[in-house]
Length: 97
Image (tube, rainbow, N blue to C red; front, side, top):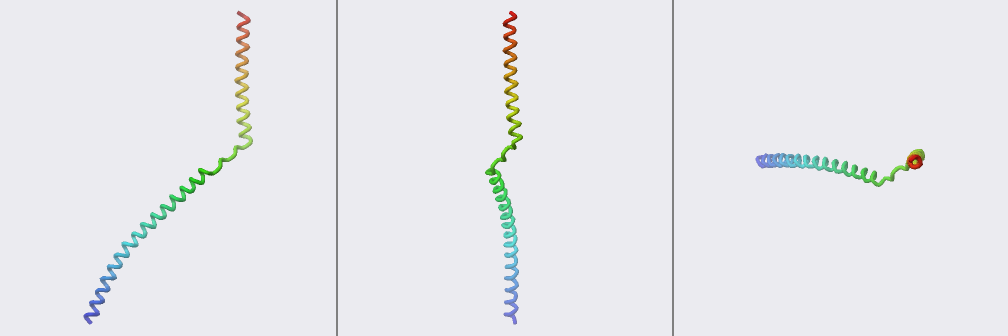
């Protein structure tokens, strides 16, 4: 009977020790799981950034292209007219002197 009680006491002590160890391991597993989730999230963010970096740029619309061409031509025309008016004024000044 005493042997049985001693074995039972040893088993209780071992069970408590095992529970304490397993609780510590459970906490470590939870920490590792959180780290893994964080790494997965970071990895997904990096994949998204990489995909966006290599994604081709959208083609400009035809209206935008036409707008830019018109703007450029209009600015060139303004510069040309300005230059011609300055030449005309210079000729008039030369003739009047």
